[in-house]
Length: 164
Length: 433
Ligand SMILES: [Fe+2]
Image (tube, rainbow over all chains, first blue to last red; front, top):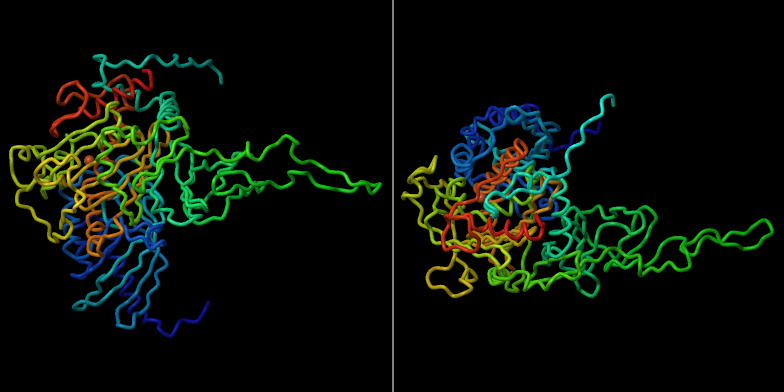
């Protein structure tokens, strides 16, 4: 094991970030989409982007939201207008790394795997990638100022409706 | 095996009810033999297929790997600047030698026996072509192996496709006798040229999905102006589509290609939105930047029709291309069939070299409407999957495609399935079924 870097954050901070991730994925896995925007700051950026685009510096994303309000609009879209076969999501998050940015905010990265289970169907591996996140404290609560979900999966198995 | 199994009866002729193309037999979407014939007759002969954009391979040596039908190809810019399309299959042992999706190369070498090809697909050399010199026990030089004396490099290159580049878009055909691209495009050519008038394109990125449905269902989806006002309630809610809006349905003389031209409306309540489930009057976006539509000069109607320019033109270029212009979002969508029951759908979003940073951002923001997660596209993939499920369930049935009658050709409105019938009119001729 290498020694911890000097910029290492406290175990309390790490525990708080772990708690944030646990609550975030529980919200999505429970299908509590109305609560999803609450994990973000008002001026947040959320992107779900293919790794090939990210690696090549191509800006296109599958979902690209530039404010809390756009997240609220996404929730309206998926709960009210966007026809889709319903499915459960199950997120597995691992390999969390947390560092402090010079401005005091936190930079966190973690691997994720999302399994999809449609009604009456076998479970399949749906989307696999890495979170690249910027986290700030707002009135005592950690929130995502930026969340990039960079997925390895070369093909989306038909459609991807719910946030990751 | 214990008991001898009954062999299935030989494929019966495909029955088209009413003798037209208005009832499409489910077998056309599920039958393996018909699918093989489609690959041969639409993807490998007589047709141009989309391969990519020049903007994807701007410099000599740049290449991109893709597929036409089920055959992998590489598009590459040669040292002289020309665009080449070659099959990704070594002439020696069939190896699909290129495994990167894109890159820059001086030449191509197969990993198996190092056969080497130049960027135009010519075989330049292979190891031990003249054999290996060894000395026998007496010290005499002899040659082991080597290719036959009459082996010719020029007869053993990669399969080269015919290439046509138009307005920055690259088409290719395995069939070197295919007609010229302009006449191939026919009546949709002015609409193609409206989007691709020679301006330099900039690549914004890709979305890729595998849709578990027959490839023709995607052609049908973009020849179907009946569904957006019903399936895509997001469109209706926020005013981008209503079935009573001004529209033009165009097809070529063969009925294979089409353009659905539309003028966005002011949204809101009306006769055609009353029956739409989940339509909510007065809904507005919390962040309206997603619909911050700014008209562009190139939207002008190519035949100079008066009034506002059309805000959308969805083109289907048979067999494997859809060209999307919908407000400020533009993309090509490529169909790669994967057996009769699935296809890969590759979205390439782009802009123009003279776009401002603001316009680029607008295009990216509006891309939220399209693609595998898009507000008005994810649902297309979903219903295509469900159609295919139904086709598999009951092979002897047929679809009903009779909105606006049983005829074929264009139409001056959205309440029609004429473009789908036109495609199947052409399909029946080429397939001889
Ligand atoms: Fe659609």
